[in-house]
Amino acid sequence: MIIMTRISAGEAIGSLIAIVFGLVFVLVNSGGLTAPWPLVLRIAAAVVAVALFVVLARRGKPEGGAGTAFFDRHRFQLIVAAEVVALFAGLFVINGVLGHGEVGVAWIAVVVGVHFVAMGMAFRLARFVTLGVAMTVLGVAGFVLAAVGASAEVIGLVSGVLSGFALFAAAGHALAPR
Image (cartoon, rainbow, N blue to C red; front, side, top):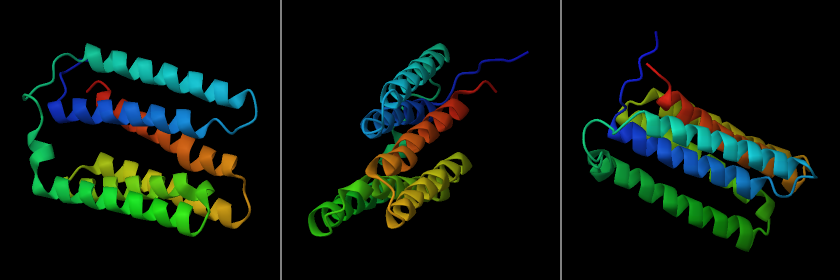
């Protein structure tokens, strides 16, 4: 028998963030594909996101209050600050200096992935490390694809859409019955 225990406030907040950003990754990066794939992927992502929101809602009010203690920690703030600087500085160089906007999503996946690895290591959360490694690999794959002449659409599919589904998988894992 599966017992649906309440999740912690941190797991609830983390799942909510993963669901929202997973959906954003898919919606933003699937548009350049040939029909019917943008529609198919966007519908699939919406269905997955709604299903995950339903599971999150059914898990009940999170245990342990608002869950803000994690976000107040100095290590968390440093990691997020480094992520923001890396994202914007890297995108400035990629888009403005190098003129290769097609790898912007690959850069985002790498930076977000490294951010999750750092969070996982700092707070001893193996699932963050796993998600971070997956997203980093998908981002690096986007750079490799660009180097061999792949289209922006293929790079977006690998580094963007698949990163979105990796975020969904992480949320699903966190919300799974225990």
